[in-house]
Length: 348
Ligand SMILES: Nc1ncnc2c1ncn2[C@@H]1O[C@H](COP(=O)(O)OP(=O)(O)O)[C@@H](O)[C@H]1O
Ligand SMILES: [Mg+2]
Image (spheres, rainbow, N blue to C red):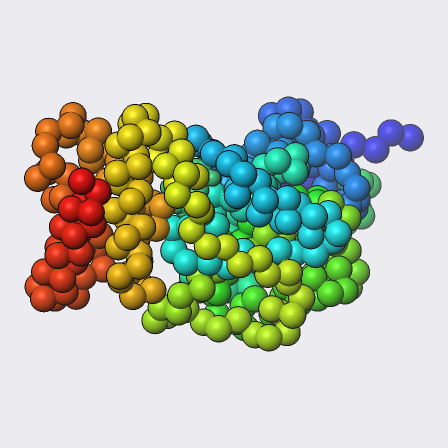
């Protein structure tokens, strides 16, 4: 005897009383494939397709590293980072603002050849932002009348879990770049302890075997943080610091900074040298929190390019405008102006 499924119950928001066959017919091909995969255990060694990888990268906006300069001193740090990552340890890059931590972390991460996911630490980040959570609850009603006097009825509630960067990286073996991780409250970062030590990610809101994810062998993490203590930066817990290999970075050498300015602005090396000399001499005079980094060199370079080489007066103003950013008072500014003047005079 052939049974025909009938679905007499109507609910708001479109019919849910179709047979599964009918539903599948109406679905676009993409959703069909997704539906087919649902419930399948995610194998931690599942290969990732190029399109999937692109989607993840786009979603978490791993910034592009353009005009990267691989000078001798850059390569040296790069080698150390790769060594520790390949040995299985997460690497923590620590250094002053603008010395090149983020660019180097992104560059190395991309060189590893795995998809790169990215988190930017800040005060409002929670563990959920790192691992993911339930995005929505899907409700499904099924009521079948197989035989005229027999009803089968069931309501199914399904919670849709969405992975965030840490869970993605742990599951599929991506490279995680956690930029300025010390800006996040230490309690939100606790989740990293078992990832780094026991190689297990625990999803606190899940139950049963879904609660634990075995960290994929290709998972790698690069964290960055600022060595200069600003207000609002949390001191990471010792337990976490103990699990990281920390590489202290300082500003690159004079020549490397010149090459970086040249690569970013296209200015002749002679102009780049002038800029870098001024910025480096300001670094010697200003307190840690106000020291201008390589970013300041590039900004002055862009300004100079905009000026099309019109005189020294303008160059001085450019330098002042760029380094005045962390100035607290007119007196402070006057002092900086004097430093810039002095630095430019010693150039001549
Ligand atoms: N090796 C490099 N090659 C090219 N540009 C670099 C390099 N290192 C740093 N930069 C540039 O210097 C600036 C500061 O670098 P960034 O990585 O943001 O520093 P940090 O993260 O330490 O504050 C950025 O504009 C970046 O593009
Ligand atoms: Mg940075």
